Length: 250
Image (cartoon, helix red, strand yellow):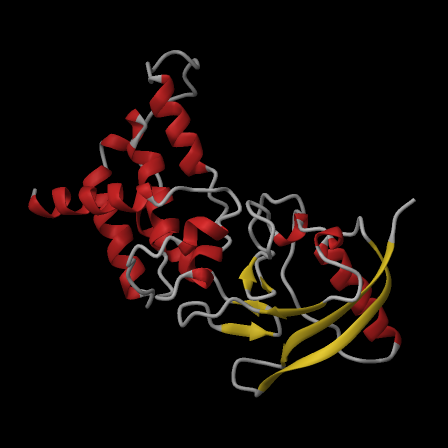
């Protein structure tokens, strides 16, 4: 039988980007330990709607740790205290009965706040649009073994391709850097034969776009790796920097 818990929440409420914001205290009683954190927010919103109050705005979609849209700060940590877990897969049982949990949006100049816990992460889309793709004509879908790729390269490419673009790396970084996100996209494609043709143009375009968006630079705090729900390594940042220097010299 599921244990029932009382959870106290301090949630950031802000009507819009230009409106003043503040933390508002709420209590959710009789919460199931098996609820995800987003389900806990759903229950809170049902209570608020029942009292004719404005529900808390937050992003979510797949609720399976795949889409990356659910990122918020839970107890001061991007995605919460459980490692390699998105907020939608963080369960109430991670906390103790009677805990007070502070819930805030990701904070970065390049992620302007929209409302409550919702931020605009379209800067990531513009970084991808700058070069995070393969445009060379490759014809029809080849057989899986048509292009010989070493297992090591394939495994590494998949590790970096696991990035879901949630923005936790930016929220955790003291410089609000998007280096881990950008590196994941650059290195993923650079490891595959299809990505070699445009490798120099890609890394220069994506890194330059990242800077134009107002993200800070990486200073190797490694907070990004610590909170990444997919465990992407900061080694990718060093690879991206080396690739950028080589491309600039060419």
